[in-house]
Image (cartoon, rainbow, N blue to C red; front, side):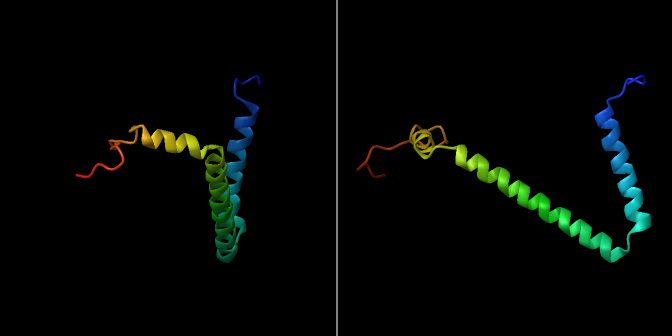
Amino acid sequence: MQLGYSGVISTVVAGLICGNYGAKRGMAPSVRLAVNTFWEYIGFALNSLVFLLVGLTIRLPDLLRIGDSGLCGHHHRPRGSHL
């Protein structure tokens, strides 16, 4: 704290630097490919989980009411009217 920097940010930056250096120097290309594939899958799974959780918070009646009110850019026609 004497330098005025956040300890958490400093730790993250040090981890990124050491991880990047270690990946180039200490991993075979096949291991690096496996690790990258693993983290890409974890990112995909977590992204899917976030979208699922957001979807679960949306209530269907509210969504239908918004769609019927014309806020989605469509004009609501009375039933039975044809163009």
